[in-house]
Length: 234
Image 1 (cartoon, rainbow, N blue to C red):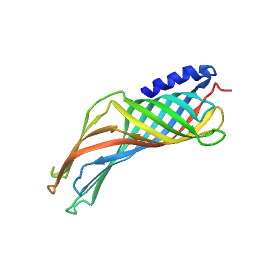
Image 2 (image 1 turned 120 degrees about the vertical axis):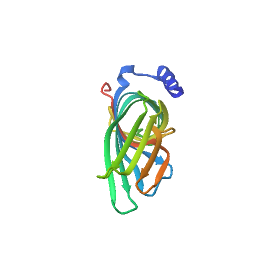
Image 3 (image 1 turned 180 degrees about the vertical axis):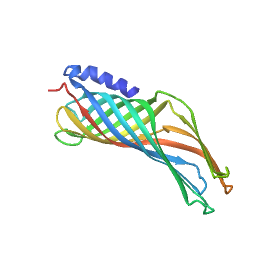
Image 4 (image 1 turned 45 degrees about the vertical axis):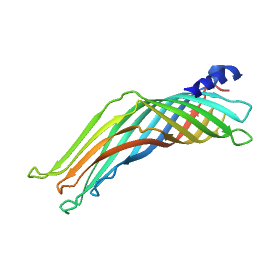
């Protein structure tokens, strides 16, 4: 929020062109990684390998005659969560049981301030750092239960997972951007989340008497590409 106030002040005092000419559209696609959990039984593998995010937002760009340019964005994120779970049995009666689920994730509002340092003499290639504030619209708690039984109704495995999330999640993005023209810009970035997207607890048991329980979290570190378009620039 401090960075947004700073950029607003810079915009008011340093802007030389009409405000509306620097308005743009931002499109972003990223993959999110960072799932981790406590130690669990050897027979149980639990992964969240694929968390896709699509971002659409408004962008305001401020170019200067100095080494530093500025850009800030108001974005909405849509996410898709693909979870894979693989269970291996010790007694050999079942070698592997696995299931894959695809669900729509959460919707986020993201405030982002970019500080862009010009690396080339033309100013087209830029290194940037961007503090971000991610706001989750809904703070709900979910409970997932799974029980697999044989034909005699004996429990083969049971799994319970509780889910919660953070309303406010600060992060920091770093990367490179390149001006394709005065009207468009392409970028690559890595975003480090300082708190998890969501987190929870799990319990597990199987027919061999193996049990496990612990905490897990999905940190939300992102790698992606972004494209900005400024239709009002000459």
